[in-house]
Length: 114
Length: 109
Image (cartoon, rainbow over all chains, first blue to last red; front, side, top):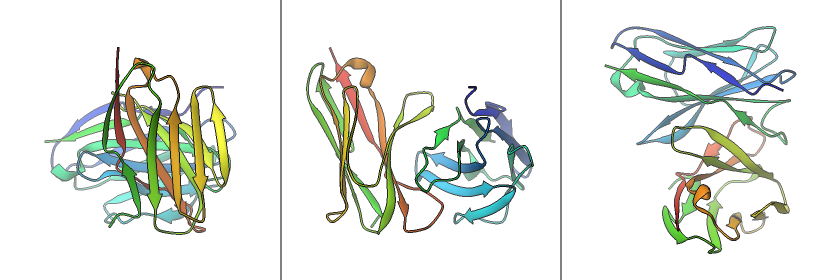
C-alpha cells in the first residue's frame, strides 16, 4: 500500500503570497490531520478533517485553512504569508482519526518564506 | 508549563547501551503516541498506547495512566537509532495530538 504523500516537498514563497499544500492519505484512510513543525514551537496541531468535515482546529490564525475532498485527499492553504510561517508542514492519515488509531505521517512539505 | 514534558532533551549513548526516554503529561488522555523523526524530517509512528506495555523488536513502550507517565526503552542501542523521539498525547476526547518537545538521541560506535 502506498504511504502518505505530500506535494510539493519544498517550496519557497515571498511574504504576502499565499500557498496551497496537498496531502494524499493512505488508501482507505478517512482522516487527515495537519501539523506545523518549527524549531521554536516544535510540532503543533493545525486541523483534522474526517469525511470532508473539519473535526478540530488548533490555535492558528484564520490565514490557515484547509479542506478535504470526497476521495479523502486534503489541502491546506496559508494566505498572506509571514516569515514565521516558514516551517515543515506534515500531514498524517489514519483510518478513523487519532482516537485509538495509528497515525501515518507523510514526508512533509518544507516551506520557506522570504 | 507544557502539557507534555519529555526528558532528557538530549541523550548520547554508546552502541549497545540500554536507553530510557521519559514522557509526563498533565491532562487526562485517551492515547499516547511515541514517534521517531530522523534528520530530514520524516516521522514514523512507533507505538500507540492507552494502557500497559508494548514491544516491537528492540523497542519497548510503557504507560502508567494513574501517574500520567510513559517511558520508551531501547535495548541494545545502535547508531541507526539516532533520531529525535517525540511523545504525543490525545487529550480527553479531542481529535488532536499535543506533542512533547522531543528527545534527541545520538548513539555512537
